[in-house]
Image 1 (tube, rainbow, N blue to C red):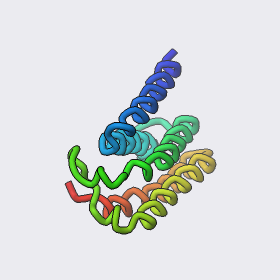
Image 2: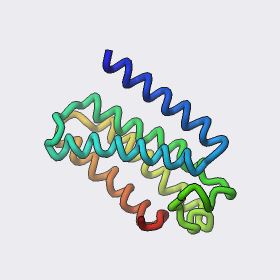
Image 3: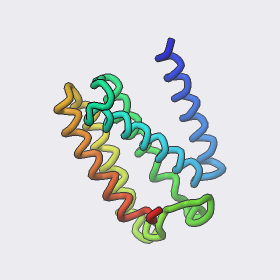
Image 4: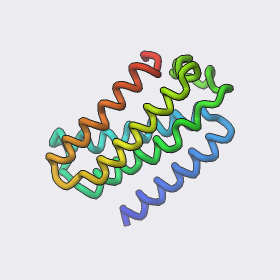
Length: 145
């Protein structure tokens, strides 16, 4: 029963993101990042021993991050440089190809992590690779809070 509720909530979140993206790309990309943060927290807590290791949940988290990356680069149209409490730096639009390459790398690394997770050690290694992308993007493309 709980799994069905989680799946339903996830489906609603994806549908809501698609609708928001059409009218408000800033809100849509913030929703993707919020989900990525929640997924990263899941696997980080497993790696830290704060949550029991669950290979299926870890794979699902990495798959969700990869899916978010697939959506993300399309959420930066020219009319979304300001407003909506965005923290996106202007360099995103100045170096769009580099930005899209960074997003693609994150997506690939998250997808690879999903395939690699077998036990706690492989989770930790995969998390390290995916985590490098997070910090790198936030440092290069996002204004400090």
